[in-house]
Amino acid sequence: MDSDVADLITRRNYPKAVALLQAQLARRPQDARLRLKLADVLILAGRDKEAVGTLMSLADAEAADGFAAKAIAVLKRIEKIEPGRRDVEERLAHLIQEKARQMPGPGSAAAATPASQPELGLEEFDPSADPLASASAEPEPEIIPEPEIIPDPPDAPAPTVSDSDLEDMAYLSEAQARA
Image (spheres, rainbow, N blue to C red):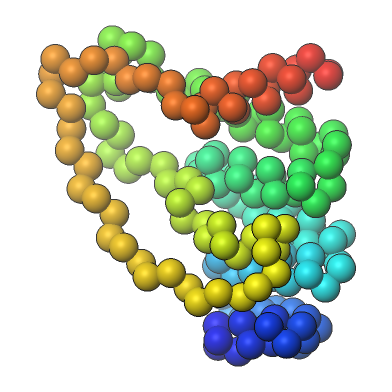
């Protein structure tokens, strides 16, 4: 089925690709990858408003399921499509604050042991499927198993802030300054 959609996209037959993806979503409504693909094809078809609606509901679902990083990634896609949307900026600010609150501080018990189920983020979304980056359809990449998580030894240094966390914090500061 995925090859059918890819073939339709390659031939720029977006209406049929949208219909096929909608039929697949009727059978698997919680499939985040299908929802992302549908939004991408809607964008290619010039139906940005529908794509934003699909992405907004996906962001809400990811946030409700506790996947703040995924929700943030989806909201940032919406910002690319419709920059300056106040509701998206507010949701991003809220999610970034939530994510920052969940980060363990140095010396805390949570910092000494890894989380039982780490949050998965952007790595689950296929960045090559972003229609804003490229309109060409490429084959799905090979799935590589995730590496085993090995706990840090007790004398390990405190966790550091990543570049993406710094970007999120900078965005939050800008959003608060605009408010």
